[in-house]
Length: 114
Image (cartoon, rainbow, N blue to C red; front, side, top):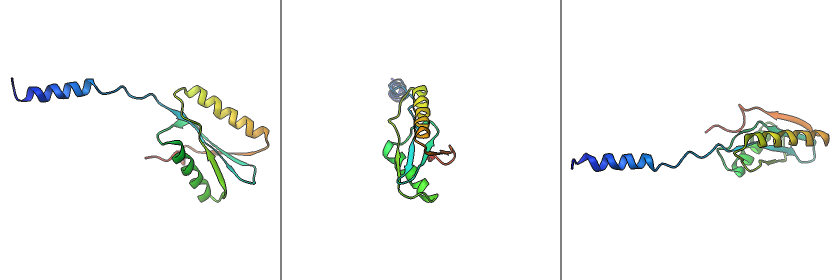
């Protein structure tokens, strides 16, 4: 047996045992200013960070832009992008009915790129 055969076999097995790519997980985030009617809703995006980090990043962006006392929430990511888009639209409709001033968050500023 050739000395390279075990290495080649190990490499072949490693490529065969590689787990299938995880499905894409989608989410969006909503932030509001406490004591005000301002609400920010992001675009739907691929969730590459955990929810707490996303919320902290969004809050940080809005505070830097001059909006103090921000509360941010991002729903659990879902592999069904359509249901996430529907939830985002429902969040917009709900906040609009409450009389909130809606602000879009551009995809260039959020979520943060790695």
